View (cartoon, rainbow, N blue to C red):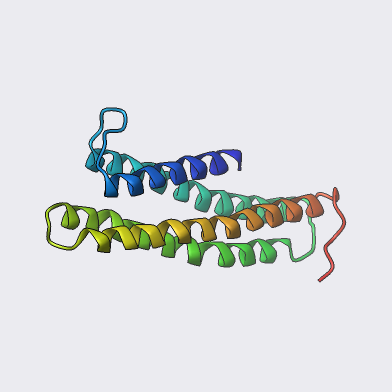
Length: 158
C-alpha cells in the first residue's frame, strides 16, 4: 500500500512538470518534453496498475482466508464494493490522461491548438486528485475490513 502512495505522489509531481512544460518547454534530466512525457506515462500507468492489483490481490486473499478459516460474513462482498468505488474514476482518469498524452503529439506538430492539450491535461490532473481521494478512503476501508475480519477491530455500524 505504501508503494501505491509513493508512486501516486511521483506520478502527480511528474504530471505537474509535464503541465509546466506545455507552457514553456524545458529539459528535465536532459530529457526533452516529449521524452519526459513518455516516462511520465510509464510511471503513471505503473502506479495505476499497481493500485488495481492491490485491490484485486487483497480481495482474493480475504476470500481465501475466509475459506481456510471457515469465517462467515460479508467481508469479501465489502471488498468487491470497494473495487466498484475505486475502478470507475481510476479508469476514467487513465482514459483522460492517455488521450491528453496522445494529443501532445498533435499539439506539438500544430494539428490542434496547444490550449486543447493543456485544458485536457489540466482536467486530467484535477480528476487524478479526485480519484486519489477515493483511493485513499478505499485503502482505509480495505484495511478496516481486514482488521475486522482478523478480530482486531470492532465492526463498523452503518
